[in-house]
Length: 354
Image 1 (cartoon, rainbow, N blue to C red):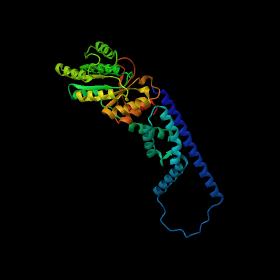
Image 2: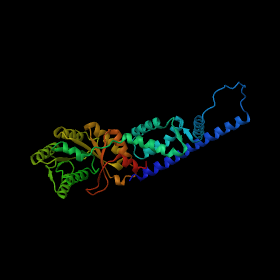
Image 3: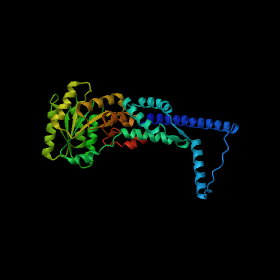
Image 4: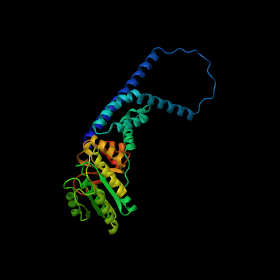
């Protein structure tokens, strides 16, 4: 998972470490040259009568000795990063992030954070790699949002209504089944609403999942009003004491105005407690633009990324989090019902090598 991103980051950190260490060596060399010149041409000073004072105590002499040693070490092994140094270093990181599906806006946010943390900071030679990794880790942590556990949220209201959105082929219907499976394993009953009355075979696909999981599905004929299907599912849940309603909707491109309007109607009718955007982690910039448009249209509450197990890059999670300012709730890690994992920002950052 995220192998390409991890390898690229490792390479960049190593190269940056070498560049800063070279700067430290240059600084040491320049200082040595100056000290050598001073030895050859010592500065003449006027002789002045020494000031009489009491002899220093042993404690004072020891303290002065330690301070002197620290100053020497500091001069030898530390380097203060200038703005010019930072711009040169970040240029390569910017290309790396863009190459790994991190949106330009998110890249700029990372740059701003790193600037505050690194410019003007004195970095010890032996801690260069640690400082760079820590700064980049903090920058990404600032973007990623810790998700709430849906299992806890559903206890707040009954029935708890969740609507799912996304384009065709993103794995939305399978993700709904995975979440239903998770609920069932935690003794949370659910009913499915087949509100995708637009795409051929969509109802049959959801029916297969419902049958496999042993749960009820509410469906109408193709061409029916999707909002009416969702309304009936909520009504059924209330009548039978079912705790959650999971509403499947037609996959739509963010540019299809009529289907986007239909999505708004479903939300008006059902007043969902959670609106989830589903996208492929490997879709990159396409998924980022979709998330942005869906969020602007209906105001999503979070996202689920599918196919993260085959995603070599990983930047989609950073980008969607930044563009929507909403958390990644879960990630899909395979085709089985159990392959749904609560998103953990710290684990994600570790996966990319930070």
